[in-house]
Length: 279
Image (cartoon, rainbow, N blue to C red; front, side, top):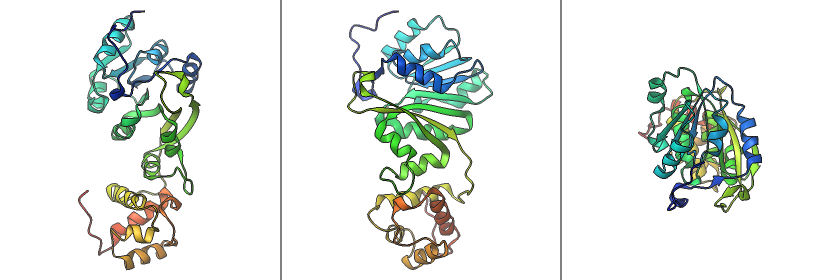
């Protein structure tokens, strides 16, 4: 195995914490359950510990690495695998649809990676913007963030990000990973999370409006929903809408389910006096 350049140091700006625990690697590979037909997009392969575990089983692995030194290292270290597509790019700028078309992949793919905390939300937005291409997502995120992803109403971790993620996908926390399993050691533990695309029973009439309602409620989460949502519509009309939906106006943001927010946003959409904002 070739060595990394002598001048290589993990870069804080890239959130580089490399998995070193082989037992955790085995748990990850078992969770992903790779088959010979799978095409897998790996975000930030780093030193390639997961990449090397995926390659013998998958049809193809597309590994997108931003760090040019790690890209060069992986190109040498994993160069014998003809089913590896190694890309030196920022994942947020990577044209997944165009690349899959280029390499003639016509079925949905799996996505995995150890996601830096500082770009977790943008990466999730990237995932959701490509959701029609993705069969399932398996990612490592900081434990605090993972708890928010899977949180349900009436819990302290429930937040706007909970609603945003659960609108698109069904998240499951698979297992916790101690900070000692990484090098350099991060300050907090992580969790390995599975996200599966979902179909909601109740559909919003306007997605942007739904997310605006959710953000307004959680940005003023100490207020009751009557007051927090009165920044969008006349207070009397908000009162009428909540009453019609049989929602207590004294409830707070964390007491409402995603379906409640969809019902509220749909009622706002139908309200004659509501001016639909350009978001």
